[in-house]
Length: 311
Image 1 (cartoon, one colour):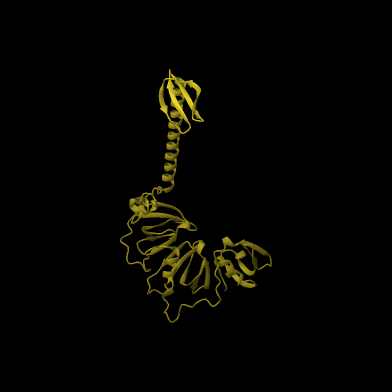
Image 2: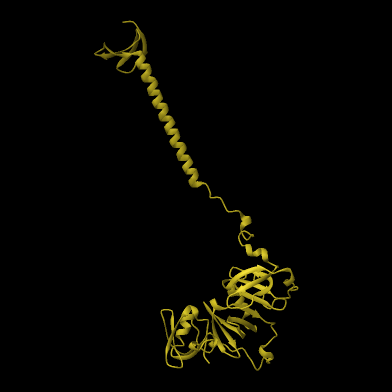
């Protein structure tokens, strides 16, 4: 047989003869012819196998590429927010009103509160009305607008009576106000004058010549106005009106403090309503039970109790 030797594996020969692939199997040192198929089929098979292998390689490449992309997504750092937004006008639009004359609508006040916006914290702002500095918790600011030009002459502010805090906050204002004669707006149009003596978790103690030790819920303070450090209430001499600390033991929270006054005669919210004057019978499930002068019981939710004091 004539042909071209194509390959020589270990136990057989591959010969191309007359366009046909012939396998010659070596058996006992003799060649046994085994015709297989036409060379065209072989070329197709080879090409198809090549395509399969190329597809396999491309598939492997695609899978590896997808794996690399997935790993890149996992290891790629998240984009940071634009640092210019932090503390900017977009982060806190009210800061654009700093050093501007503004008008506030504050909860519990009949007339708007006007002044120059001096400082702004996360939970409190500072106004200067031309004479005094007013500290207003933001929770009670119902509306803030710019004052018209004819109502914007508040002059240049003087040195504030409270030390300016690096990070202004409601609690820091109360801490700085300890021992300084101040005026509080709590309920209605009635104000209270005296000193902050103690600050607990959600209430503080305010010593007043009229009410003595007044326990004030922090959520109900509308405005705090500190006076000059050398000012005393009603122009009394310091010896006649020393700052007295609270005589009763203090609890951590306002509701716990009210429980200390159970079965005692107390006055709630400065006595603005007769139903809030009487015997504090119990404090349960955020409800305060008061027994009024006629012996009837009235219930008040703890969230609506602004102040408490004993006569």
